[in-house]
Amino acid sequence: MGQISKQVAARNENHGGVSFDQMMYQAKVFATSEIIPQAYRGKPQNILVAMQFGAPLGLNAVQSLQNITVINGTPTASASFITGLVRHAGHRLWTEKDAQNLSVTAHIQRADDPEHVISVTRDKQWAQQMGLLNKDNYRKQPLTMLTWRAITAVAREACPEILFGVQYTPDEMRDMDTADDDSVSVEDIRETADDTETTDEGEQQ
Image 1 (cartoon, rainbow, N blue to C red):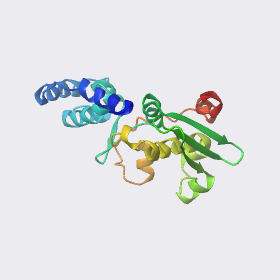
Image 2 (spheres, rainbow, N blue to C red):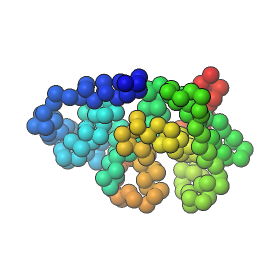
Image 3 (cartoon, rainbow, N blue to C red):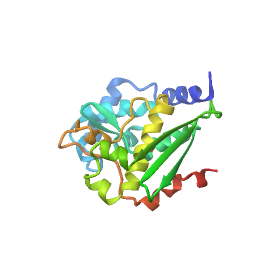
Image 4 (cartoon, rainbow, N blue to C red):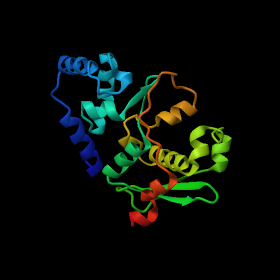
């Protein structure tokens, strides 16, 4: 078994040994809490499902509720969380940005295939084709939005096995017009374009 497969197996094993009744009881307790996301309050069934989505990712129950948003039956997570999953698995992730031309290319070099680098570019032309340029977030911080989109796209292509189905951000789901009006996002995109420079290639050397 490869190193990455061992990591995945260890995650799943760590969440074993808990019966369905125990998980349901835990979900009912959490549902009465005022410090969990609003979308989960009073909904133990949804909490239980979120816990199941989070378990293969190595998340405990509380972490699952804070990091996973289920929109129309599809689990989503923030781009920063997906970035963490990629790097936790041992893969190298970095970005190259062209602020003048509004273009970001994200690269992943897999730990088990270091000779091959997978790259995805998201730029102004792509955003225009997708009908995103007039959206508020793209007008205010286009480079940040393109950075997150490039990262999640390359993660889906390069290492989908570490995402366990949590492959999209809440914003991506909304942009595909599949989100409910009352859905709650955990995507934090309040950072400026300069704040995301920590993913630049120079800092990953």
